[in-house]
Length: 315
Ligand code: R5P
Image (tube, rainbow, N blue to C red; front, side, top):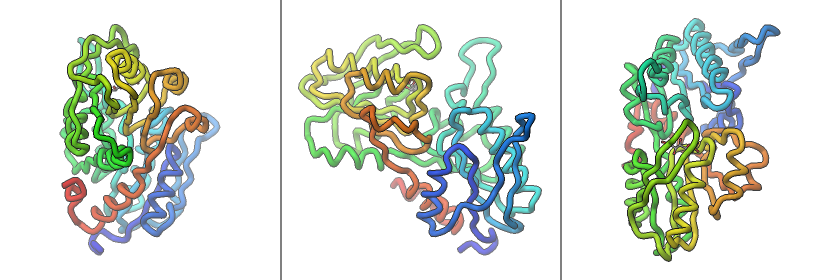
């Protein structure tokens, strides 16, 4: 135990309490008491109900829908903990939103991911623990340490159980090739790549595909699902190109608006996602399988607290 960092305490915002409770369970502790609510005027209201003086505090908050509200909750919790003299504050952000706005695509746009990073640092966070950032370069937006976990080993484990030697791993866009390549190396399978374009925001169109999927089980690997359009379009093209079955996995099931319906009507036979984002109650009706990142987050928290390596988990 790293005594100089104080005792370990875990708090949660309102975005993903079930995951925080699972992480606490893995650590053999309870989620700390905190009031996380709103005033009548809809301003966020926070009160940490336990003494945190001198403690090594972790706050778990996914930046899921409603995104901006969850960001403010997290910032105010960090501020409250800092003013209550926590010795070290780690923001555990299983899903980091605004990550697709990490550069300007056109003039007069913000770099939103950088602003979120600035706000977290300004509020008083000493460290960030997150999983599968859409763009790994976002780590560099922080001048505090970032531990960047990968869900790939957990997701790969799920597909190993299929015990098939006719799998092809598919990246649904050019930006995801590195991620899919890592995945296919872990699985020992070939790679196919889809080129996609977005004629307008939130609409995905497949342009072309490279690789042979005929007669194979295709596994699409993505970091997040928002509208479901990317994966549904990719599944359709893979079927047209002769894949016998199309499965998919993604770390973050953000599931905006009608995504679950789009995926239910798609050519997918299975979608595997993690619990970084809480899922709608009816998600199980839509071919969706969930694997938990709670043990991974818990082990990472333990290692950070004890000043042990986190990257060793992915060697
Ligand atoms: C894009 O670069 C991402 O990796 C995902 O493919 C994308 O965000 C998925 O969005 P949607 O589900 O709305 O197509």
